[in-house]
Length: 67
Image 1 (cartoon, rainbow, N blue to C red):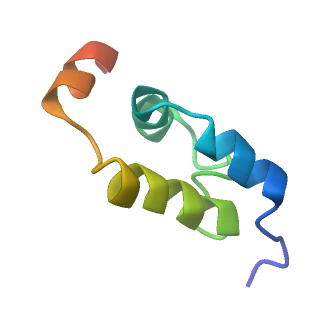
Image 2 (tube, rainbow, N blue to C red):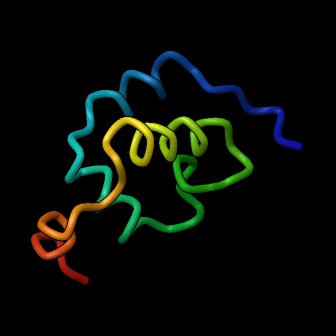
C-alpha cells in the first residue's frame, strides 16, 4: 500500500483541468504519472473527477483529441 497522500496541491491541479484536458491525460498519459498510477491516492481523485463529475469521455472530445 502506498504511503503517499492526496495533497491539496494535487486537488487544486486536478480541479483546474478542463474536461478535455483530463480526457487527453487519461488517453495519452503514462502509468508512471501519479494521477494515473492506481496506487497513488491522486489517481482515484482524478478518475472520480473525470468520470463522476464530467461523465467521462464524450464522442466529441474523443474525436478532437484523437489517438
